[in-house]
Length: 226
Ligand code: IYR
Image (cartoon, rainbow, N blue to C red; front, side, top):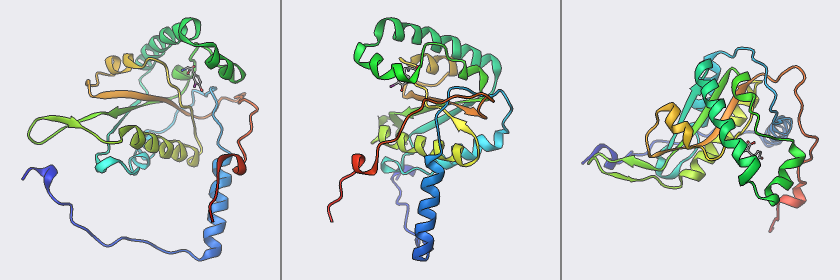
């Protein structure tokens, strides 16, 4: 029996029930903390210790995943030459996207956010993290086979990464230069890995700006059947 075929076995769940009032106060506090998160494109170049990035990646990797295959690789870059190379390639793609590839319906919803093909955040931020999604895995018998729900799994991991970064007092941006194939080449990843998100991480710039936007109300995002 190969390693992957072995049963994991089961252990007792560690679950510390909280008093009802503490459940509510924690739920409120966490909501308020997350509601204060904003996405800015304006980063300071102030350094951030590697240990914080490692902890954010470890937090992201607590995400549930299809068949527990953990189909993600986080590539963390602080090297200025590599960041510059990525910025140049991202801007080349984005210039084509903004000038030729973007349909008007898309441009219409992006305009209020003021984005363009200039990607200063890639070189300003002290760290750039690229989340690669693994669409395949190598079985013990050396055959390649699919991973399962890798989009969902990586999406959840990205959410946890963003929450971890916000919780530690830093900021990040979910940037999706499109198409993203150049990241596999620059970073030497293999064919079964697909760049999914580019996330600069750091402190916001002193004069960082964010769009003046609202979040949808609970009534507009939910429906309860009781
Ligand atoms: N990838 C481009 C365009 C872009 C697309 C969406 I959807 C955004 O919410 C923001 C930007 C870019 O990053 O500029």
